[in-house]
Structure formats: C-alpha cells, structure tokens
Length: 513
Image 1: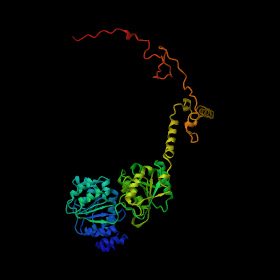
Image 2: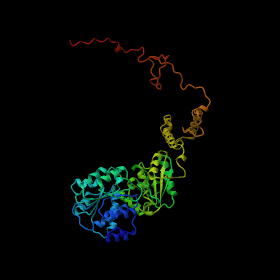
Image 3: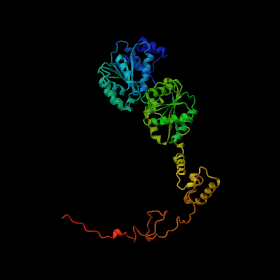
Image 4: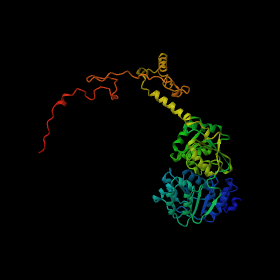
C-alpha cells in the first residue's frame, strides 16, 4: 500500500514524496482513512511508529477548504510537553509546504504578546499545551467554539503529568459536534475511561500490543551498586565500550540527578547536554537542537524527553535509573530503534530495583537479559558501599580530632621526630584496642574478632580521687556531676556550710484582714 491509496490530496502527496516517504506505517495506513471519513479514532501504537503523521497528513487534506477567523482556531492539538508541541509544528511545516495555513504554537516560556498576535490573525491549526491554552482563554484572547477537529496526543503522558482535569475542562469548551482523535502508546484503565468520555463511537486502531517494546531494540540489564559515584563509573565504561555508538540519551528519574550526571560526564571529557523541566525554554530547545544536529552526542534527560520525540538516528539509550513506572521504560527505550533501525538499550540496576524490574518484565511480556552477570554477582553492601563512608568518616575524624595539641594546629608541617614519636606512642598505647593504626584507620588484616583475642586484666583508666572536703575548691579538670557511689562521702550541695542570709528568721506575712 502507498500513500496514494489512502485518499490524501495531491498537495499532501507531493510533500510526502519530497520528504522521501513512499509507504505508510501500519498506524498511518489504518488511521488515515477513518480520519478522512470524519470518524472519531482511538489510536494505540508503540512509540516511534508514526502517530504524528497519522493525524497531520489527513488534517492538511481536510483544511484545504475553508478559512480561519480571528481568535477562533479551526483545529486544536493538545500535547503534554513543549518539545512534543514544537515537533508537531515541524511536521506541519514539512508536509504543509504546498498549503497556506496559519499554524500557531501556544506553549510556556514564550512571550504572550507574540502568541496573541498569531491568534489575532486567525489560526487554522492551534498546537498547545493545556496550561498555556487555559491562560489565553482566561484572558479572553481565545475562543474554542469554532474547533472542528480535536487531537489529544500522548494521552497516557497527560495522565502522568496531571493534565487530565485541564483536558476535561478544555473538552467542555469545544463544540459537541467536533471530531476527536485520541492517541496513546499505552492504555491503562484511566485512559480507557477518558476515551469513553471524549469519543463518540470511535474506530479503534491498534497496531501492536499495548506497552510492548520494538523488536529492533537489543535490551540489556547491567548490575551496579546503589552508590552514585559507582553508577557513574559503570555508565562511563558502558559508553566507552558500546559498539557503533553514534549518539545516546541517558535517562534519570530526578531533575537534580540530570544536572549532576551531565556535569560529571563533562568533567570526564564527554560532550553531553542536559534536558529537564526546570530549564527555560530557550535552553531546552538549544540542548535538543544540538543533539539532533549531532553537535552533542550525549543527552542527559529526565522523562520530558521520553515521550514522542522524533530523533530517528538515536543508536543507544541508557537508563541511569530504573523508572518507577514500567510504562516509562517502554517510552524511554522507544527513543532508539525507530523506523525499522536497530537500537541498544542498557539499564543500570541495583538490588533495590528488583521489584521495578519485575514489573517491567511483566509489562513487556519477556525477560531482559543481563550483561556480565545479574544482581547476585554484586558484592555485599557491607564490603562495597561502606568503604566510601568509612573513608569519609576517617577524614572527618582526623579533621575534628580533639586530642590534637595546639602546637600541632599552629605548625603547618610536622617534623619527622614528632611523627615518629606520635606513631611509636600510638603503637605502644593502642595494640589492645581493636588493632588501629597510628592515624586512626583500621586495616583489613588487623580486624580479628575480639573473642579470639586473649583476655587481659582491666587496667584502671584514671587514678582514684580522694573525696573533696567541704570548703575545698573544685579542681580545674574535675568533671561536674560525677557518679556518686554509695560509700562516697563527698558533701552534696552546700555541705556543712550555710550562708548567713539563710539563717535569718523570716517575718510572718500579714493577712489582708
């Protein structure tokens, strides 16, 4: 089947041929005829199968007749993120070269005045994120009563980001007689409920099992410890050893980890850019454009880059963190292996990720092979993860030692005589105290159990003090609040001495009567 068999207009077919496409993908071949027939469509397909063109191409054909009016868009496309919205705009620019249509992009991080000017001129296609769209509507700059076609793209991502209340509010603003296209990569029960609410007798188009991974992606799990520095080291080894690595996306669960990992990679000589939701729009687009053009081969990103971004030539995906939701795993690895290409996906996992890995394998319906051993090959946490803490504790203990003399603190360098005397004194003093070194650090060979050592008679730790007399002043180094034994005759309080003012008789209080 070719695009000419789908009922598209000649202008659209010319643009598709100029873009180098000859055959439609399964989702395009099944969805486009129903869209042109003015039916509601529920499209389910794994990421990277061409869902964007499945509604872009028939919309261009349908918009060839009619004209736009000021502040009343003819069609509305809702996207969860700014990057996806900008990508849909690029599709209209690519396939709409033979059309004279006004396309407006309404997203956050851009001036309200520029967007308002586009709405005033009249808009055939309005591409928006829910939050900024409602901002324009509440300001009275936008009317949705003229919308003929509504597209809700990446509906499951809308659910994850909490946009469903905004979507329900927007759907109530558009006419009831509209045509609705509902696309999603996964179909949890909540999305099924929304589809029943928004669609009227829809045509269900499902070209793959929900939440399935592409067969062109080679998936591997990599066992690593939970410590951040160790995971970063393993990631660097994977990047250096990866075969045919052209570029790669590294996913983290948290935004602060994205910035930290990007800085770490840059310090080790890797050319990497960061992309997360807290960045301003210009920085986000600059990072994405640099990655698309090949100027930056590595992109460290949060899940803002996991849904729907069309970067066809991504060779590798690295999951620095195992995603909390198994559906996110499908979207992350779907950035590679697109359009029939082969891809590679590596996921770094620790012992704490066993439950998440089980949920992912249950969702995709297949086990994921391990690279160089599974979690059982990891060393014990006491040997693997406690050593860095021990070293940090030793440094803090050496820095904050209270038994260092003032002369040591005052002199920047210690002579060999003082070092030798200190070491000899430490050896003679601490041989029976759990085998410590002179500097306070315990070696592995000097850590036998205490039960194996011969018992020694306890030596007194301090000389026996004579009880202090009543009028004797307290010594400078004598601690306050010593434990009082039963045979201790040390006076309590003032002892036998009573001040004179306490011996004066007190006058009786006069009654008010």
